Amino acid sequence: MEHDRTFRYKLDFYYLQALIYLVTLVLYGGIRGNFIEREFHYVLSDPIMYVIIFFVLISFVSLGLNFLRNRRLIITHDALVFKHRWQERRVPLSEIEWMHIGREPRVQTGGRFQVIVFKLRRRRRLFRIRVGRYERERELVAEMTKIAAGVPKRKLRRWRRPGITDR
Image (cartoon, rainbow, N blue to C red; front, side, top):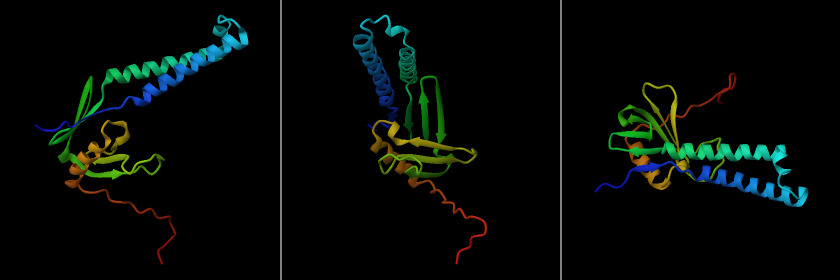
């Protein structure tokens, strides 16, 4: 039996965001209602409370939408499949022009492998898979390394400023 090569999108960030905003709402309402106003009906007329309620609602809506979307990355023997509940996008391995597995220079997060970038032949924009957003990160990197072995590496560009020459 072949091992599972489906990688689900993590929702940890959305859970944490919703929890932090909810705790902020409860703490602010409790402190403002108990210690300052002594009654809770004054708390509901506070504009800061409306802002916090807005952030709580937005965070729960984004969590719910991402949960319903059910995003995942499926690696088959001949394609990468980006799938969610309503749509599926297949990227044939034969269409990959080059692939790079490594760090993102502008992102300051830990980890040696944090991004997988690849370019398709007839497409201008790059595909970027952020490894930390998927479950079982090490297995994902191992699977993508197997795929990258059969694909050319990215050619590094050398940027030169006009007027500067090598000596």
